[in-house]
Length: 435
Image (cartoon, rainbow, N blue to C red; front, top):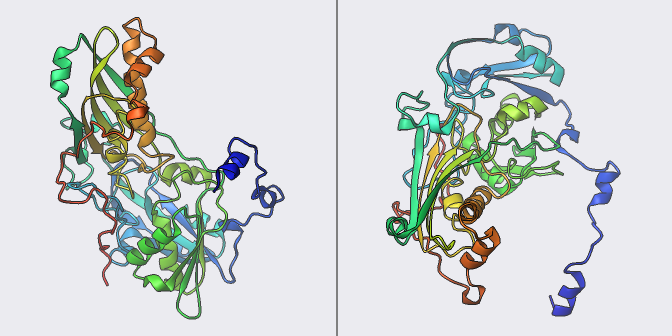
């Protein structure tokens, strides 16, 4: 692009090209797509945050009008692989997540059983006939409470409910704190949120005569979804086609792997007919991954003239009951690596712990970790202004990186973990599905 072309567009209002079909009702979304002989899936979800599943009775649901199939987690054991995270920080303890809960549920909304029927209404009616005998267990939903002694433990392989410990820093924060005139401690909360898209999730799986399978899926990452689904369901990747039609909002929540993404293709292959699932709004709030859910404790060491000497950060990232795709990387690499923001803070020390709780899993949402990291930096810069005479803008101007010296090397050094392993794990571990 020439300089003249750039000036023509930069800062100028441009006519949008994609709006016409949407404002005239011509958008094509997953739930608009119909297939001959299509059946509908509905899911029974746990009403408990933590419980043992003692018995699932499908007899009444199986006998309901229009029902073709009713299954529990035990029926699917070994037939579909577990949901495995895609980004695994070295040293992370990964809890197993079956597609449908088998003997224990760990959050309200977790899949417990499913029904496939001739219509969506019949499928939902039949789900209401499933009887489940639960033994309710103590639950923990707060990340600070989850790591205390005596807290309910979610997974046998995740002691103290901590899946990941990640440390990073540079300089000598202890020295900075000793030389400082004052040290302020702040507790920061990035509240949990729900990515409430205009269009809830849905999926249609349709087999073809040549043995290939086509999935219509609201995917922000269709090529990645093809790899994940092929691996877990046992379909050769070249025989699986993903079609991502128009998407009514995603914000990161539609770039993850969910149980329904695996159930529909499995059922379509098993039954030999197209199978569709559509998520209600209440289901969306219970099962689509949430965002944020961080608690930070930060210390700012500074002089009375407002000069910041050092910053110490302790992060607790609440990732819900299981590790979703990127969950071990969001509160760690994506947050504390950015804790100093655009500022020159010579002495920086950070530790991030990833914590499981009896809540809906948390994953990427609009920047995933970087907004949280930016919030740490900006609060650290603002805090000294509360006790010294400088305005926040003056402290910002004094601390911001000198643009004439850029690019510069950050004070943030390599993470204090096994750096012989890559921080980004690009290949998913093989699923536990029996071949």
